[in-house]
Image 1: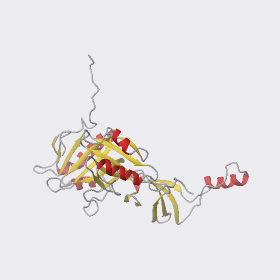
Image 2 (image 1 turned 30 degrees about the vertical axis):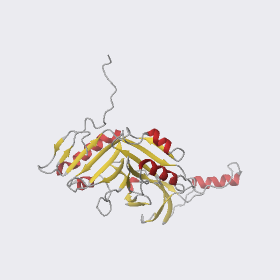
Image 3 (image 1 turned 180 degrees about the horizontal axis):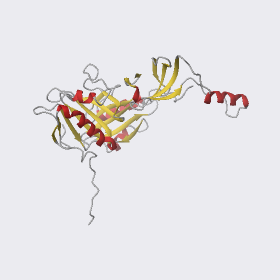
Image 4 (image 1 turned 135 degrees about the vertical axis):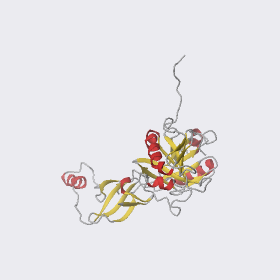
Length: 211
Length: 100
């Protein structure tokens, strides 16, 4: 009998401590969650093949490729703009998203793919004080008029590259954001976000219990 | 200081890395073209103008969309007059990267 097994585990397995942290009672200012099991593929159009990539994406995901600084919501995946002529295909239901093999077939010769499912870590932050907490971390302007629902950005948070986008408002009509960070930086960034949120009161969801 | 990336919009300068002068053009001559060509290449590789005023320079948006950019910046006031994608940035353009 082996005395250990190879199990995949979230890079935030130890960092995520579910429950209420920081100031106050009542409605938390910030809600934080992390979903471990995701499907994520980086798609980069090859030179001059952008139109073909858009066509293939429409067929495969049911949506055009995302416009600059935008997210495109497809049937089987969310496409997040990540730079000129490139995007991330993200799905929280790895089983129902197109497999890497299906994508390789769809984008054969037109785009280069890189599977990032275990390379990036998804962190979600929302709540009435989410913008205040994020203001300590990012130089992005998150005002509604500049960064509405569906806006996306690639930026640096605490010197770490982050894919950042705004999702539909939460149940309390507060802004909700998602970010993808390199797994090796997820732990430090998670602690940074928690610490920045403590003064507003932060509710941390158990791993996988995200919306 | 903010730099207006043509793809991402205005961003903190900490997201960018300065590479250097974007004005030198690679001489269109074979490398083994003799002393005259060697002189041209010496100029291309080593000699730079020390301009007080606007210069064209390469910047890399490594903390963002990872694009190479060419900016016109004043060395005296740090004012950015323009920031554009370097040739070949993004797959939509069919040109190869680098100056023609």
